[in-house]
Length: 317
Ligand code: CP
Image 1: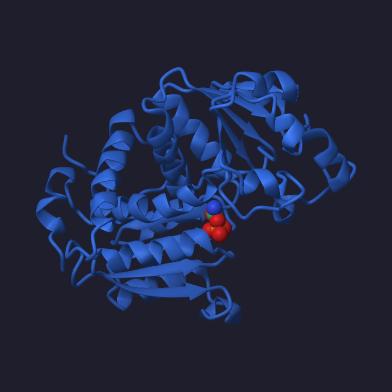
Image 2: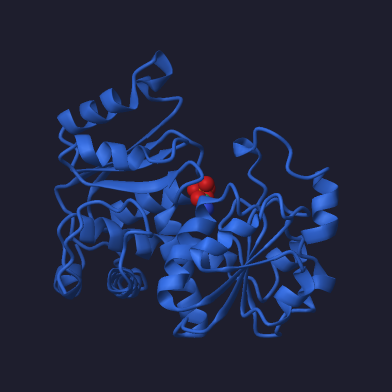
């Protein structure tokens, strides 16, 4: 099946076949990243602008690395170095970037729907690098890619997502991808952060950490997203940690083969203890590394590349 999308806005709108195409393309690029010459010529001559109007370490760097590995030129702008600080609108900023002949924009923004908005007013592809509490599609893709590396097919696999689900774009993108891949998802946390209506998305909701962890094959921790909470949703961080933080005792309730994931940034000692974040079951840094190959796949496909041409286009630059 040919790849037809120019934008990557959400995982909600992707089909299972499209998610699997991205994963297969990422796997091919991951093999090229294991070579001594990691660069491929697929996007030579193209310019990608990373417009990050919210803070980022992993996503921004991985998109820049991915663009460089594909031989594209990459320019990164953030909220302090762009003219948005002088009152320029997102629309004007994006239209100026297009007028400067960028071939693609990667956008992170605090407003849900801002990548969709840009996709309607620009002629170039727009990639969502996280929009408010809405979606973070490349994080969902790299998380499910990493799970498949460890578990194989995800059909019937039990995945627990634990933490601040209400304000998490990572949770939403993972829910959409995992449902399509056939995994059984349980959301766990305090009822204020994991309301029952999430069951409308086809997942289970639980406030009983011990029983949820008992049969989990994956546990994904999420941090408390203070920046999106206008009011407090629990009495104190200490109380949250005492009820839902993953510590050694609670990790002993897990299946011994279960993997521990976190999209980052980690708040050590809050949602996860250091000995688990750095322990042998943690795949947190593997997630980060996989973010390069997955974003190479997204940039390549949305630039008009086809999955079957990855090998042809992946000779060393
Ligand atoms: N996981 C994630 O989006 O991390 P950054 O905010 O550092 O990009």
